[in-house]
Figure 1 (cartoon, rainbow, N blue to C red):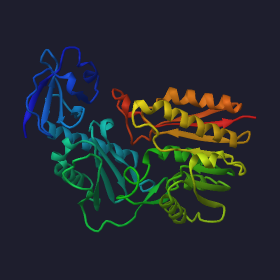
Figure 2 (tube, rainbow, N blue to C red; figure 1 turned 135 degrees about the horizontal axis):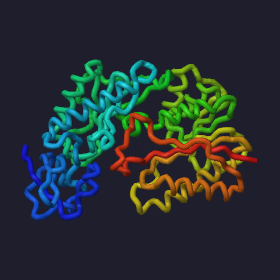
Figure 3 (tube, rainbow, N blue to C red; figure 1 turned 90 degrees about the vertical axis):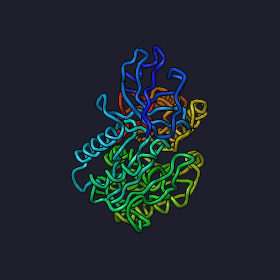
Figure 4 (cartoon, one colour; figure 1 turned 30 degrees about the vertical axis):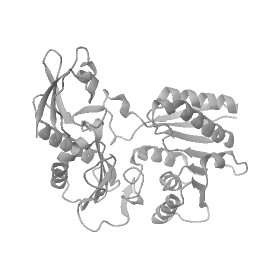
Length: 390
C-alpha cells in the first residue's frame, strides 16, 4: 500500500486542525501524485507540519477521509484503535440485555469516516460509504470477530457504486430471514438485507421512549410508521388506540409482526396503507398524539426550499388534527434542513393553524450516534415534542 505526504494550500488547514475529517481535492497543493483507491495519505500544513492521516478515495469529492488517532500513527493501527474505542463505548452504554440493538460505529462521529456498523443482537450490519475502505474490509471484519466473538453474522450492505463486492454475508452462514432484538425491554425483528438503513431506525431509540412516556390513555397516529417502532413504544406506554400509517405495505406487515412479538395485536391497533399527506388532510378521526417522522425530504441543499414546504404542509395538517392538550412529536432526518430552519417552519405552521403551541422537549440523536463537534454535517436528526393549546 502506497503512503503519500500531501500538503495543504495556505489557509486551508483551519477546519482540519479543529478536527474536521474531510479533505477536498481543491484544498491540496498541486501537483498531486498518482493516488490509488485506499492509499494512505498523511496530511501536512503548507508549512510542512503533519496534522493527521487518512485514506484516499479518488472517485469522491472528498479526496481524503481523515481517521482519528495519535499523531504519527499509521492508518491501519488508527482504524483498529478507533474501532476498539467505539466498541468500548457501546459496551458501557448497553451493558445488559434490555437493549441489544444499537449503532456500533457511527462514521465521522467515531473518528471512522465512511464506516457505519449497527448491531442487532447476534448480527452486525455494515455499510461502507467510501470505496477507499474496501482495502481494509478484511482487517475490519477480523477485528470485529475478535472484539465480539458472540456475533454470528456480519452482513454487508452496499452504499457506494462500483463496490468490489455485492451485498452479502462477510461472516457466518444461513442468515435468518428475520433477526430479533430488544429495545428498552420491547421485542422487535428486522430484515437486514431489505430493511431501510441497516434494518431499523436505531437513531430514534430515545425518541421512541419519549413517546412511550407521554402515550398513556392517548389515541395515537404514527404517520410514516415504517415497521411500527413508535407504535410499539406508544402501546407499551399505555396508548388507548393506535393507527400506523405508511405508503409501503411490506413495512406495515413488519409492523404487525412487531406488535405480535410484544402481544400487542388487537382491534385497537390498526394499520393503514396510505400517503402521509392524504391521511393528515382527511377529516374525521380524532387523535391526542401524532408522531410525524417522514423520510429525508432533501438530498442536497438545492432541495431545502421544497423540503421546508413539504414539512410545513405536514405539520400544519397535524396541528389542525389535534385537540387542545394534544401532542405532536415531529422529527426531521434531513441533514440539509438545519435545526433553526425547521423550528422556524414549525412556528409558521402553528401561526397559520392559529393554534398556540408549546415546546415540551427538543431531541437529537441517541447517544450511540455520536457527532464530533468539528463535523456539524453529522447533526442530521432533530425532534420536537409540542403541545397544542386551546
